[in-house]
Image 1 (cartoon, rainbow over the protein chains, first blue to last red):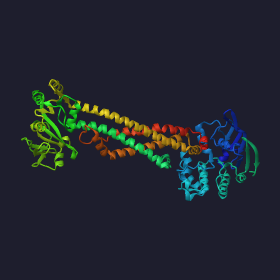
Image 2 (cartoon, rainbow over the protein chains, first blue to last red; image 1 turned 90 degrees about the vertical axis):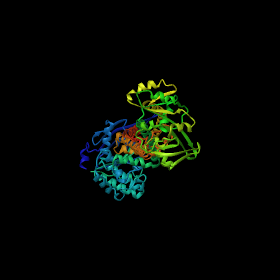
Image 3 (tube, rainbow over the protein chains, first blue to last red; image 1 turned 90 degrees about the horizontal axis):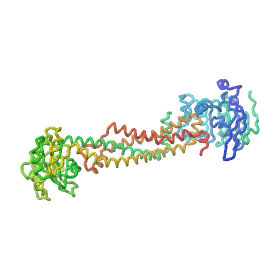
Length: 237
Length: 386
């Protein structure tokens, strides 16, 4: 993943500095994120943990460019994304970020391969080789023409992972990726994450699952929109 | 996979809803296309029929020109009559080539669901309608009759046979038969004018005098002269056409109002279907935005779905209208007092384009709001929706 490394500043794929996301609810001001600092290097896998409402998903939405911060700096691959316009954000999201959701969110009317191909359609690209390669990578060769309703949870998440990877993103954002999966399936999904990180992809996982969290290189614990604790599990070179 | 395929899959994810919406579109388009085609076809058929008569004007009793029009096209009884003396006045006008008097009345046969129209004529009619192909001879004696082509089929009779009228206790010998003319003439019984007047107890009375001019440009001069004849009214074929179209105009306005209501209902149906689909797919739209779809992609996809729905409905409506045009024509004709012979539904490219414009119009109007709403949904909020 030489490309990824070349695109970063100071070797950082993600550089979050004093990031705030504030909402107004009536007269009340809610700081969903309150001065978060976080960085991620290519090939690094980080787990974001914390109670519901602690700011995990808000952070993922910020990093995924689905929402704009109230203030602070957010650099992805060396590009300050907070000032990007809507159209630029769409292109940026398409080329740099892959999303995985707890409920998979596959398009029910599309087959496995069509779901995986969808981001390419939006990007006006045709790369059947990439689609086939990802189908093989997640082990769904026999189910490529199946509809989501014909798959179990684990297979649906595999499709979601392949869909997230099809545009060759720089990092992967996974929100509770194993929340609806059985133990054995969780292990298989974990293996895929490790393989992706080994390929140089940055992986951020928001999870309540302590087993999955400890699979990462680093655990970042959120509380009330702030980083309460950070634990390095594996030192990277 | 193309956007087209994606849109089609989305549409048919809810088959029942889509098919019901398509059904309303099909009906709206079929009605609209039939109405437009009928309007064009009717005017054309009427013109053709009137021009084909070779008659430039008619002298009819003072009254409603509508009755005169009905008389020409369908045959029948009218309450007023012209005195026979009018014919002499008319024949004195030098610009007139042929003045053919007629006396027309009917015998109702409710058990057979029809009215037999008896037309009293003289040899002038034979000269006026020189396109008639008469087999046999023209009636010379009071008890002779010439029958139209349809009459010979209905009565299963031909030259040499007899027709008995129990209502009048009269017997007629068939001496001639008309070849098919494609007009109402095919359905009449032609007897000598004096016989007809006597048969229906109207001696020295006429129903109408059909006129052919030596030069059609003399119509205004002749009309002015005929206007002085007491108890008579002159109607030119142009006026007749105008009167008929005016009469049709009222019915057309009513039909157009009904079609407009159908259009609004079907547009609302399409809007409702697409909007419901957008609501149901809010999170799906959020996922698409998260996976690289721009607002324009979402807008285009939803609009394409509306367009496809409308086009499918439009195509179905056209097929229904074309396939059912003969049935629709027969039904419409039954309710028309002045239905010309032949097809009154003209399936023309102009009508097709008009209907196509209507379909695209529905898609543009009905699809805009749902498409805009879907495109403007913030990805983060869309993903949060249940």
